[in-house]
Image 1 (cartoon, one colour):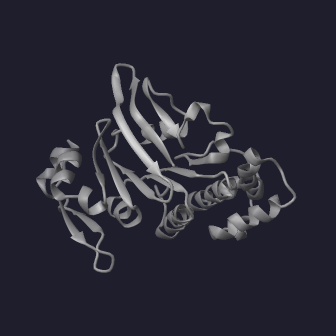
Image 2 (cartoon, helix red, strand yellow):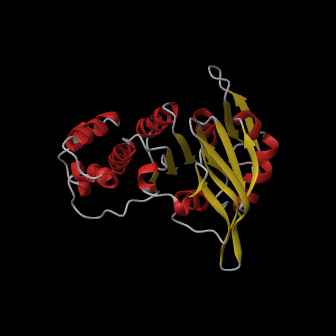
Length: 264
């Protein structure tokens, strides 16, 4: 059972943002989608979520075209980069929004508190959304997703830069909950920019560059110095973590002229 992009091409104007892209997300795995800015990562995730429609190719969820999947919000949840909420809504009500695809039930309040507890945000239950910091909002948004995924139908979780601008504790909480969902049999795809973090978290990496998949596989197979230089335009050393053996990426010092050429 899987969520797949099959030969997907998407254009914006005369530019191909994605070109004949194939991506498969299996249930039970955590996959990181990596690549430089403008590579097409968020676009690929948007197509997989059903919010963007490709010019050619198709999206398939568990053998059925995504567009023909009934009750899609019960099957997959999406954590976007930005929240559209801008008014003083109580945190408990924000989290409860995750239950909308499933209809209301007598235990919704219990589910809300359980989701907030899972992300270490029980103390925010009675606060207003507009009073929260960026990290607190991300915890609450993840709690809302957990409420949405609290269903036998839930199969896939898509996260678009879920750790951007977050401290280590919040990032660990968000990715930890995503990992827990994956280990329970769900499929998780996350767009990540931090290569060391992606290597530490993901079972598999998919590297996008200029709208194409240029490498995929285990972190150690994808994150080679040569490939990082080719795709990101910088030189880097790749070390093995002393405990996990996963790759750690160390770019050359900032005064190196490779940086100035890349940023010019």
